[in-house]
Image (tube, rainbow, N blue to C red; front, side):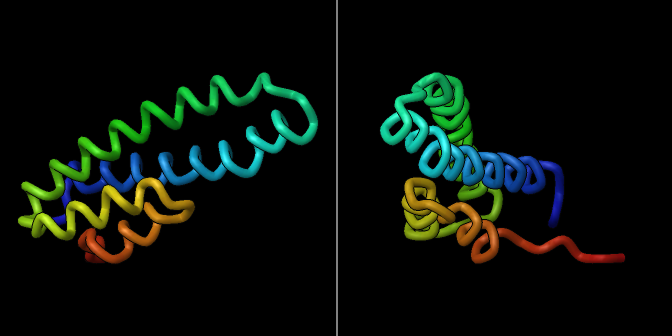
Length: 99
């Protein structure tokens, strides 16, 4: 059951989580503490695109993996929490089986 759609969603989930952490803990402090705002726009844009892809991907996983609506909402809620997508990935996605 571990196929390309799940792999792609895991990749998007990981990138979305990392982009959110970079935005929160690097770009925003640079802007508001050290008055260096240049990093916020590109990191924010990347994070925004990845966030939208994550939500769309979560919906596809909802359909593909027969998640309950509650599981879908938990995954979407996790996307607005630092480290949340890592939790959702571990909790709700099937693990790759080693051959």
